[in-house]
Image (cartoon, rainbow, N blue to C red; front, top):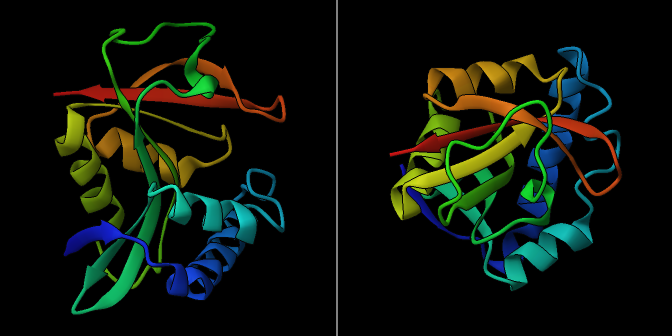
Length: 161
């Protein structure tokens, strides 16, 4: 598997992956985290344009995608009912999903992100048991509660090398 920046012409592939992810989440008890329309095509295109959208490929096929950026994230400025492991510079991962066709793709993406800066913060919906399991399996530690832009609660994790 390899990680590289997403190309603008790959937008449609990513949109299909996110559509699949929304269906998967809904059938696994997490219908509200991304609803029926998140992330929007414009948000993904902005991620690509800003250089923060990445894809994981195997044999030249896109098998996963995610947002990665180093530096402070407004979502993580305040944490409730807990605390971050440290206040050092960190990277964030958002909107991670895979095709589901290659085992370990999401873990590969998380490990790649961790290799970039050694300190990753990430959050997920309380109902997203699949993602919580993935984070636990990959050594992320539960840190507390954060609130995303629309005011909804997320559970926050961090991993430090």
